[in-house]
Length: 69
Image: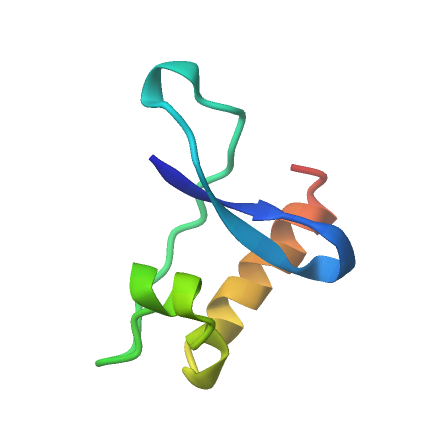
């Protein structure tokens, strides 16, 4: 399983964890605008910020921080 982990300065990184040894995590539900889904290739290739839907990921980052998750 891959998760987005919050790191310093409000940024995140993609981490891979074994499903049998999963860290605590939050699931925030959302939908993507047509052809604006952030995919794995965007996350590892650094192109995620070029998509308008990246705002949803930033909102989720702010929400988990606000809720101390």
